[in-house]
Image 1 (cartoon, rainbow, N blue to C red):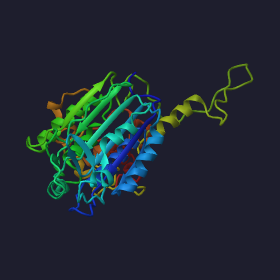
Image 2 (cartoon, rainbow, N blue to C red; image 1 turned 60 degrees about the vertical axis):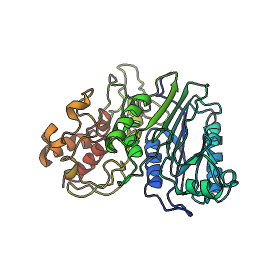
Image 3 (cartoon, one colour; image 1 turned 90 degrees about the vertical axis):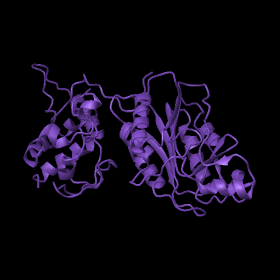
Length: 386
């Protein structure tokens, strides 16, 4: 099976920033929110929670456990504080204090506990832990409770057999720390958001790209660690490049000569072509704003990689995806979009008018700045390219 069509996908996404007994972390809640949005775009049912206490975390995991049973793909993403004790990994809710040896049982959440919930009658399991940040609570536990082996870095997770396999990805190598980052997202989440939904890219190749990006972004100080045991190629965003693309509105059905009847399509009166067109339109991603789009004003695209920038800024920046399908990264990565395409406001307006005229054409090929950029261009054209 190649993970792609008509699959049931369920994800648990947790992110904790506002710790009550440690300094707040800047990015985890934002990381988790962005990942939840990204996974929804990839057709996941998402159970999410942000800045949760231990009790709230257990309630959210319980909801996920019921929802994930029988899923084709089960996914878990966590961002926040975590620690390991004697080779066992724990995630820390925002109310964890870890003042004595009983704290782990009553205040922390065992990673093994979450993994058990996502392993029941599921085929593929994907786990992403951005939880290796420098953790002062691990030091508190080690000093006050005298627990040896308590440290911030997470321990390796063994992969169990069953189904089509498992992928476990850590933001950093076992026993090492990960950076929270100075931008809107951690280095690991930034790379994961960019690569997890790339068209026709397997999850293993996507994680190779994530590892490369994080290693470069941290000047070699952080190297994600991936443990993979998949028996099938898992692709979260599959596009049939050979399939014809339907554009424009379907005309009214024509009666066959001499038949006295005509094809009425579905019960709603729609033809198969109209139904196919509507199905395509359901796949067009939504922008983060319903308002008009202007060339030189910041736009809420709904994509963390480009949010808050204007069209004018983005066409002077670097592409996120290849400008030509299959082009090697060495040819386009690090280059500037205006140099690749000779983009300017006039040329871009003409392209935008095409997207506005045939809305589903934004799905044809990945744009160098992503599909949401094309959706924004269409709305910009609809407003007169102002």
